[in-house]
Image (cartoon, rainbow, N blue to C red; front, side):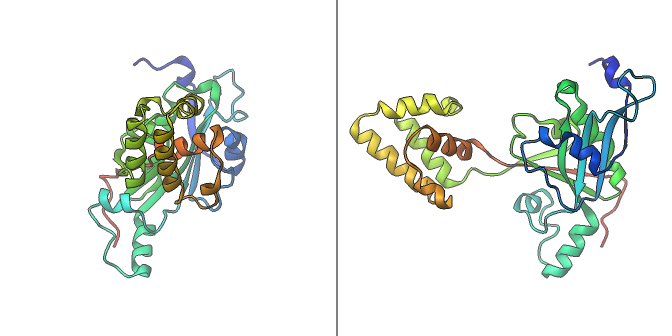
Amino acid sequence: MKECSICKKLRIVVGDLDDYKALSHYHYRDRRIGPYAAIFTLKPDRTSALRPDKKTVGVIVYTMPTPGLQLRNIATDNLFVGFDKGTQLALVNKNIRSISRVIIEPRFRSLGLASRLVRETMAKMDVPIIEAMAVMGLVNPFFEKAGMTTFTAKMPARCIQLLEAFSMAGIEKEELIDPREVQYKLDRLGPDEAEFIELQINRFLQSYGKRRYMSAGVERTGFVLSKLTARPVYYIWFNENLELRI
């Protein structure tokens, strides 16, 4: 695909917390990121009409890795398993950096800039492994487009059971994107089906603390659907030019 003229005038430079804060309100997660390993930004060059060095178009934040991730163990064939906690933590910290945030200013989305930020900064971290976790990865797979390999978490048994229950009640998986429409169908179930679905929903909610006491209705249905359809995706990239550090 031909690169657009705007993209040609954007450069990746080392950034700081101010660059992240400038775009943080566009991200769905908490704005606080805590300690970080590196920040890179996309900014216009001096030939751009977007005021060079004044406008932050995109930002990527790298952090230290979480000590233990099951999907990491799968992706690395248990490379970091079998050590005591101290040794495992040291190995993980020496060899891995995690992508914590990738944010593109809304006016510049759909131009491939998120993938570019990931692709062009991973090697700058000077570690053998880069990883990322994303709840919406299957919807917007820019990590994969940047060259990372995907590993998807298995669906928990409680999710499978509730999906099967919904299907038995005539509510199929592809319909689970609109809480109001699903609630409309639930409200029109016969007594036996309604009792069965209510039992299944209550069982499902046992894993979510105080949420298990939510009253039936659109709000509860929306929460159930958000947990039912959200499957974390793990991404990993190996720097072929670097060996594992022991």
